[in-house]
Image (tube, rainbow, N blue to C red):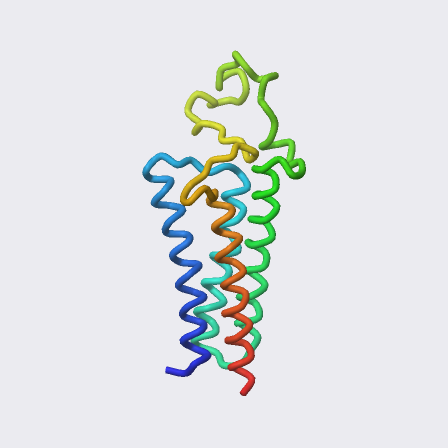
Length: 157
């Protein structure tokens, strides 16, 4: 196996592991907020880029994988800042929700009683070693970007 393909597999496996971990956490009751869900989509794109990179030589798919990792990393950094109140987040998933207090799900949305609980994006929920899932995603995304770019360079040789 070439160095390029080992790097591609490493980056692809990292996205896969992060997604699996997110879904396992959800199965055990750790409900994601909207921004958590946004961070998952670029990981799916990175996995597709990785599969394509294994089948097609050249730097284009590793570069697309790096772009996907940069996208999820950017969302994760933004989310981390929202969680720590460094900046405001989207109005759709931040704030105290005080104006909604006392309202039932039925009053808010049709079928609202059947909806999952609303998780606010600005709620700081440490996950492991005092870091949130968004913090960990940001750290792993930086690692992935480096691996993807190394794979792109290795593919040019």
